[in-house]
Figure 1 (cartoon, rainbow over the protein chains, first blue to last red):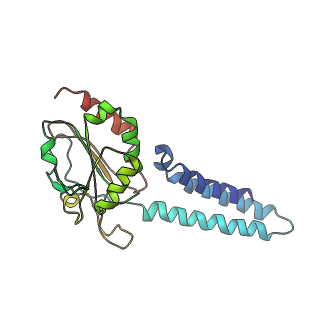
Figure 2: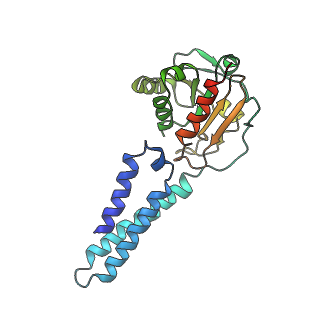
Figure 3: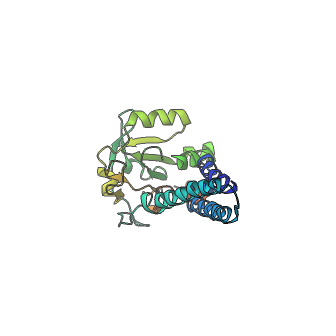
Amino acid sequence: MLSVLVALGAVATYVLFLGVAVVRNHPEGYVIAFALATGLAVLAVVRARTRRWPAWAALGVTSLLLVAGAWFNFVVARVPDAPTALRVGEQPPDFTLPDAAGRPVTLADYRGQKPVVLVFYRGYW
Amino acid sequence: MSELQGLGAQLSEAEQAGVEIIAISPDPNERSQQLAEGLRLGYRFVADRDLAVSRRFGLIHARGGPDGQDVPRPATVVLDRAGVVRWFSVSHNFQVRPAPGDVLRVVRSLVAEKG
């Protein structure tokens, strides 16, 4: 049963500490934890003499999490590399976009005024 | 969004006044505005509804959305007072964002620079 605890602990840790950069920026951590949990479950199956089904159930749960987690981290979450228009030492393309109140925000207006941080993001992630 | 919270929380008021943080997403503005008010952040949220600007910046993850639509590649770009790119980071895994410390260091040094 330790294996299921490790796996569920990994899920809880990741979700709780999503706001903590170290945890968020190392998503492979939960994949490693799932692998560890699967390993423990295999051990439990091997060592169980009677009543083997709880160990098999644990192995089922943990291996499912391992496959799902690995697939999500290495396939779903991967962003393919592509050339950007950004070069250090050069000006990026200018733009004008409406802000939340509908007022236009023009990047070039900040030139000579103050530094700017642009954060491109998708929804809430 | 957590990268925005981190950045805003760690800059002093004076530092926040010395830098403009513009958050760009295809999200409808109303939702972004609610989010901004909820977090009490001094950021400008701008809507790139048709992704035209993200495309011009080369920051498109083609068919990367949950419904197979194009979405922006998560990216952070720091410009100096002259409007020149001094640092940027483009994510290769949408779970991962630049370390807040890296962005803070660049922003602080630029805010401290004489204009």
